[in-house]
Image: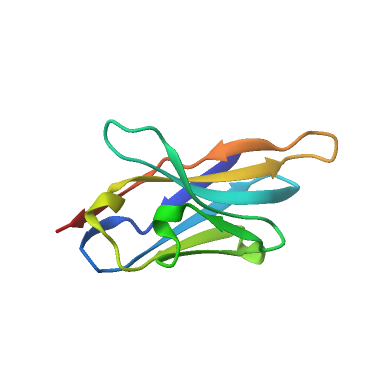
Length: 121
């Protein structure tokens, strides 16, 4: 069984900061890419930022320069540092990881349960 557990969401004023964490636990061989997605009410889930196992990152245009994704491979954890938050960043944030469970299995996507981020104006 593999689990992704997120933490760090909450309520913050505009221009404030939050740091999200997502830790993978359970039985698996390796983790490839890890990403953060978000879904605002009435909108589709969108990619916020991703990071490969080698540390290559990509960001949605809307968060470039404000958010930073990082990972600690020894802890199987991915982080999202969010600075200069705006009301439009309000959403449920989901962690995603591409995990290979055994030597002979393919990687598949796993999702966290989501954590609410609310930015007040």
